[in-house]
Image (cartoon, rainbow, N blue to C red):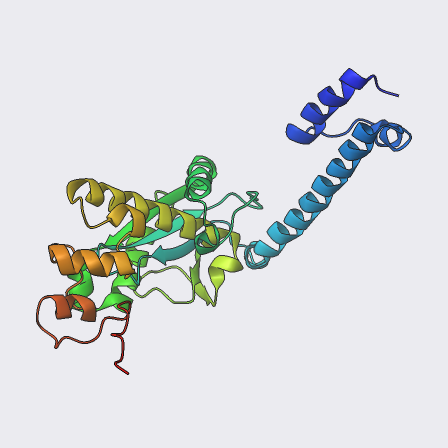
Length: 277
């Protein structure tokens, strides 16, 4: 039976630090009648179960890549975009070539990861480990010129073209990118089904968010750091109070309305007036 002081050391080493259990330790804890030993064993078993579940999830995320590796493709780029819905700022795409069989714990569609610090940490790891990564942008002016759908495709193409290593295949979230020479496959909800596309999603989201935070510092009052230009109630109120910024998307109906180019209508987020009895 480990001395009482050893239980704290075991918890730190094998639960908090995640080091592999040495032979015989599990059986030793199972035979230890103390509540602390039983609690430690239960926590270790819960973590092992979570690790197995995450391992299966990550294995599932590699199914498209594994198919392509089997066909002889080596440099597979995952491509996704961020910023299609906001009223302000560019649309940004991310393209990432991951090492063969690469797994990153916690990597998922950026929209599912609500913790900004976690997204940023994943982006750092992706940039460190990737064979190549790049972002591509389409400005608000380009969005107004070619429309948001085609601007998203333009940003994706620019991201692929900016990669320092040329991919031999592209996996793309839900679309096909025009005017690139590589074979490609569009995958519906690809950021939930492909490790490479999920990585591209993280790069796109964190790159755009950082840019919107920089714009917020230059244009205080619109709250761009908090809502990143999305059509939130706060953004509508800021536009109504402070006006339209140069990088607002003038082809979007709420901005046209703010500029007087469309007739006024009841705002989506404004409470309806009280009816008289």
